[in-house]
Amino acid sequence: MFDERAADDDPERPTKVRAMAIAPMSGFPPPPQAVVTLGNWQQPPFNRWAFQHLRELIPTQRIARGPRKKPLPRLKNPPVLEDLAVARLGAGVPSVGGVLADTWTDAVIVLHEGQIVLERYFGRMQANTPHLLMSVSKSIVGCVSGILVGQGRLDPEAPVTRYVPEFAGSGYDGATVRNLLDMRTGVAFSEAYENPDAQVRVIERHMGWHPLDDSGRIGMYAYLTSLAAEGPHGGPFVYRSADTDVLGWVCERAAGVRMADLVSHLIWAPMGTEFDAEITCDPVGSAVHDGGISAAGRDLARFGMLLLDDGWVGNRAVVPAEWLQQARHIDADIRAAFASCDSEPILPGGWYRNQFWFVPGPSGDMQLCLGIHGQMVFVDRGTRTVAVKLSSWPTPQDPAYLVDTIRAFSAVGRHLAGLGPVDDAATVKPSGPTGIVEGSERGHA
Image (tube, rainbow, N blue to C red; front, side):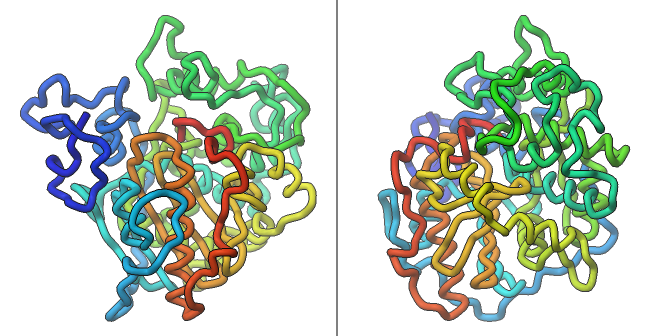
């Protein structure tokens, strides 16, 4: 184990992971016990270093920023937000600062009405450090899909096989693009990470996220075409990272452009980002759409503002407004699909649409982009607040960390909007067992 405090000289870091005498990858060369590898990079204490240095472990493709960056203005004399009270699900100091200190924060950025009111980096992370987004990547791919739909290049009601004929005869045969977008395919795909033989572990070997075994690596796309069905398409919401990987492949075929360049040309450059981003790729060069993007915190905040402003950046429409509005609209079918899923007890009343999460909040419905180990983009239209948190939780999931972070950002938004403290009765309250969150997403992007 590893003493984060000693290695990072940061007294605000949690003290639950201790006893390793040297920080990961410290030394010239680092001693064997400090080396980050494909076998340990998702585990503590190695994950904190790995999430900020993924290009040194796994091949990546550049997501280029454009020639012009759009500044993020800063509020002069911003209020102190860390002392705001938070009714926490977990233990610890009941304040925003307490939540940030206890939940392995690497970076936090809060914008109100488009202005930065809080920006902090922890440990060795800096403003220009690319941090792995895990499944926040899915929401970016969802926006790429929406742009292609708006351009007439992608039909959400079309069968997957129209774009990728290789899925004929597979578990995805008969599924529509809409089924992928809302994770309502009937494909057999387990994300039980405790089981090394679960599909989510197998696909990681094919995508190059885990060491090669005797089965060999044939590339992620070939593995996707081997998946079988376990039920009809269009049924309940079941969190399947494979659905996003198929969606990314569909987008590439529809556009004739690889995902790294689609994100660059359609989103990253038009947003006016400050820094290049990157996406991991498998041994044959296919992008890992479900969770492979790394980006700097401020650029992720720009993405949050894009969502808040209905797809507009200044006077330019980047993502079709109707695409984002459709995602926010809940109907009986979408709600029923979510109500029976494993995430309902953690995010009661929520729904999943177009690769976004939604949950009722004290100031209205909140839009979330979520990734395991504590990655989040929080968008609260009721308070005009965007918040980004990049983290390195020791475990893939922690319902208390998740709920406490949502509550903290809700409290910040209400304070900034002059709405007063959050009514405890209106906070996100888990309604049952808290062992599962993000669908069945255990340990994955």
